[in-house]
Length: 158
Image (tube, rainbow, N blue to C red; front, side):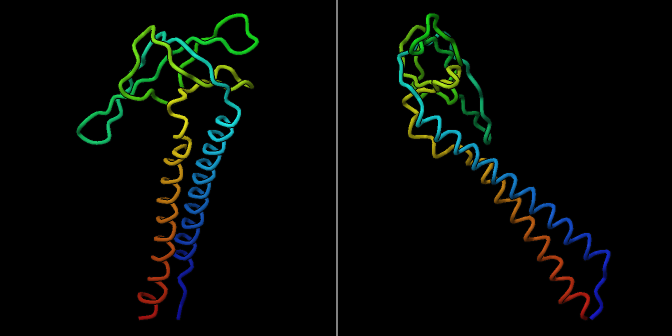
């Protein structure tokens, strides 16, 4: 059996490179999930006032999905002046109106990070997109490696 070195180096090298990219994407997703979890552990609940609603359209097909992110004004513990910040996640439906009070949670280490308390259980979704992309890239890496095996055992041996 004769091994062809140029295709071998190209296929296995690209498989290794794709594998590294997939692992990096998975690590990014894991870091994002850990960040969301640590935020939830440190978060301090407070009542905030909706100053503005920012609509963002997500198009995942033919129908756009509009999500609303609230700009809220709240007073962190020990602060003299209220802060204004946009929530990290969208507000649940139906969205509140400007002037409504909603329960938010802020990070005492970085008070500008604020989120809606009603979305507290959604921390498990953090990083899901990065993990999914990483999984797909890892499958591509396996496919490239499988293509090399196909060349070795079927094409080059016949």
